[in-house]
Length: 129
Image 1 (cartoon, rainbow, N blue to C red):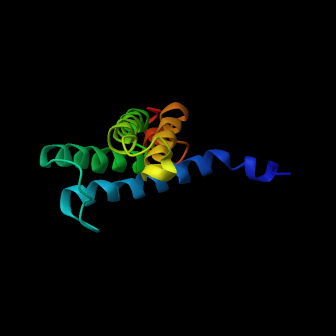
Image 2 (tube, helix red, strand yellow; image 1 turned 30 degrees about the horizontal axis):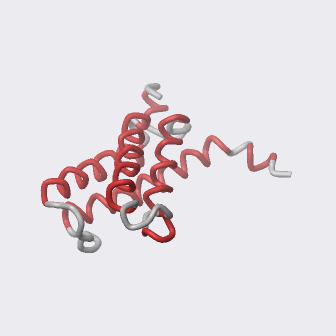
Image 3 (tube, one colour; image 1 turned 45 degrees about the vertical axis):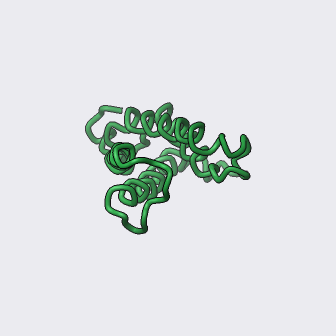
């Protein structure tokens, strides 16, 4: 029934990676530049700078599809660690602890690390995927 859509799965992988990368950059710019809104509390200035740089740089790399597997793997780990350190102490359940987005980002980035960037990427153009 969905064979017509399956034909486009490589391109859909690329579009999904781009969407996740672009939206994730916002989390980094929030921490680094208070844009588009002020960062939420919970992290000290040093950690805010570290994760802000990681999220902005690696999120941009994922969006561009450049060094995708490495960048996505780092971001997957960051989201998993952040979830366990910041959200699990409130409750184990993501819907109760406010960590749903971290779980989803973690698994999406893990998928990109395993699957690669798709055809619409700089990695594909440079043949580094």
